[in-house]
Amino acid sequence: MRFAIFKTPSIYYLLSTIHILLVTAGCTLDMRQQPQVKPLESSDFFLDGQASRPLIEEAVARGHLNLDTQFYEGKNEGGTPIEVFPLEITPEVIRRGQERYNIFCSPCHSALGNGQGMIVQRGMKTPPSFHIERLREAPPGYFYDAITNGFGVMYSYASRIPPEDRWAIIAYIKALQLSQNATLDDVPPDQRNKLEEPGQ
Image (cartoon, rainbow, N blue to C red; front, side, top):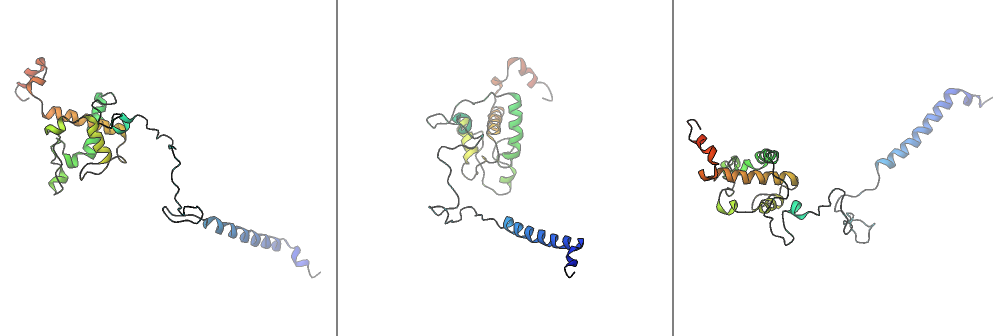
């Protein structure tokens, strides 16, 4: 008779709810406070005392097996800059290069490539003009290395510009060099009369 109170449904619901809350609270606490380490933090778990683990030797991340050194490094087997583009240069590639050049390069190098971009006009160091003889004669691989690894005060753009776009930019730079240093002899004979027309 005195235990009749526990037979009511509301007491069972109350006890069940309390039990579930206690179990859930314990699980949640463990899930929120899992053991973890910060990068470069020390650890007693590994024998070398480092939490960050070195890459497994000769392991390559998926999608990063860049065996084509000419395309991904701009260099020959001997480590010298390549003289020929490792991809076909089409009008689409030049247009893509112009677009990327205007975004990433023109603030310093200017739209003409003469090194008088807006950043320079505001006091930053002047980069060399692309139209000096040394850079006009530089092979494409030279420019690729500069974009990838940086040069002088210019930092690396490897994390910002993918390899395909680096080559497109270089193709546009080469076209820019030709356009700014062309002579009348470079114009096809059947097109020269257009240069002499009024308003041209």
